[in-house]
Length: 143
Image 1: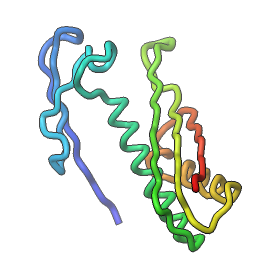
Image 2: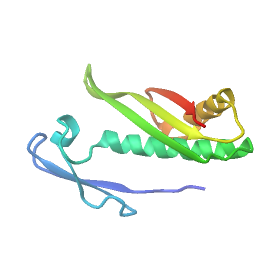
Image 3: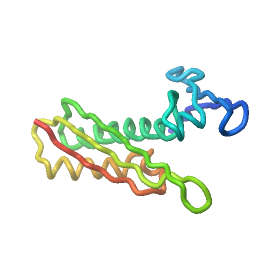
Image 4: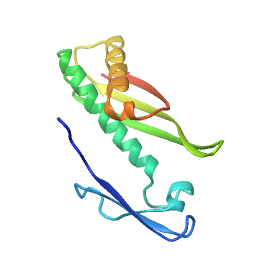
């Protein structure tokens, strides 16, 4: 099976004074603004790193749901955040790390089993496989 999804971007102007917009095929984002200020100066608008973080958090959590099911476990709830680090390195900017933070309520498991399954999801999710960076995980089972 091969699935293809599309995202697109439009940009007008120079790097600092230009403006862009990002859209997704599904319409979840439709000409949503982004630019230098939203990426580097904390201004309103999106940026590629937060979109990567949302995609990674979503993919990882779905992968963990699959792995839990294979272990005959079902989560009542899983909350995942992905912190994407963009920093200047030799030759420009690079995403140097992604840190996943997961809090989950999963009846019938232990912290040790939960961490093992979560780490399998971290290394096995398709978005994790895309990155050549350090991906870390804090997985906390809550009751």
